Length: 437
Ligand code: NAD
Image (cartoon, rainbow, N blue to C red; front, side):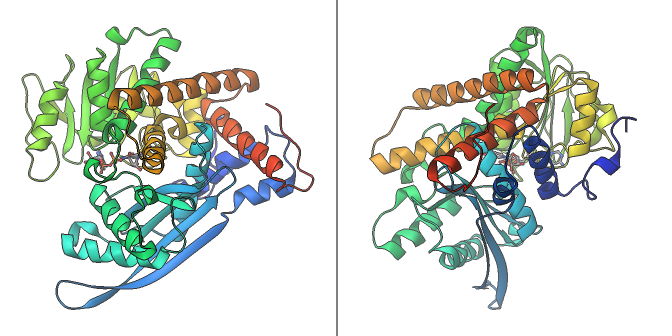
């Protein structure tokens, strides 16, 4: 750890995502002249819903599960955010992730607030029938709190198009009519949007390519390492490879696949499609070597894209980083301490709330298509999304230069300021100041 950045300046638990997000918020508001009542109202979620519900399991035993839906802000529109199934899901983490959604939707200027939900469960050990029953029970438990104009869930870790279809079905039965706009991330056969699957990865690639050009790197001479080859990482890899970037390393839970001449991303995608366990295990091409997981962070590359999960770059491994630009594909892959150290070292970090916002932007397009009963073609959707993210990056760069801060704090400053503007206009702030940036 560097001398200037010391642990005492940060929250006690480096790996506490909610605390890290809150820390970014607290530091960003110092750049804005906000009344303490405004800051306080944005710190806390508007509503926290904790539910517990029974699910009959295949073995005949009924188990009780705990679920959450945290609705952080509805200042700029209905709540929006994913639903996660994972053993570690808890109310505090859900709270942190819900505020991240508020900042993300505001930053890319879509008319939503932020929310997040989840159920503490281990989907890897559950059958499809058990997952369906769990999803229907969870939906019933929160059914009065969601809706197309109230709160619109989407997939997150271990939830997918099938999960969204069950929620849609349950909600439509409850209200007695078809309500496609109650969830996004649905399959194309059920009101889903073209381009939604690719959107997050493509958005990351768009922002990464733009950032390379801003920093004067020729994409055709640039290299990339991508951690995670799932829904996000695999599409980012495809798009970047198509743009001529040499992808020298890709990793997933089965290991790091390294080839300095550049990997054949198309072949890797084919391998993944035919894999029995959803990983790259057994993948080989000439010149490929396998590396230990951690070594992906030490590679001398132009672009590093952590697109697997949170807390991957920490105070323990940040000194290894040898990339010029990091684009955060996952939510919170860099801890606040590591972020400060990277800033000090002059390594550019494009923050998650912009870089991976392509998914929520196309979710917004899905919702508008459902509400209006029309459909856009894929090229139109991807090009609108690209435009939004690239416009967001320009705004970030401008605010960063004006405020003399990092891209992350510039992102939080823009997002918070836009929400405060809306609070003022709605008359929610008694003596609130309109903060100017
Ligand atoms: P996914 O489950 O489809 O893929 C995750 C990938 O990471 C897999 O390839 C997995 O093998 C790999 N992985 C997991 N742990 C790893 C480890 N320790 N080391 C190396 N690889 C590891 O998930 P996803 O949808 O691609 O999401 C990835 C991240 O992006 C998450 O943080 C998620 O919250 C975030 N995100 C996803 C979306 C979306 O649209 N899917 C949108 C915004 C943010």
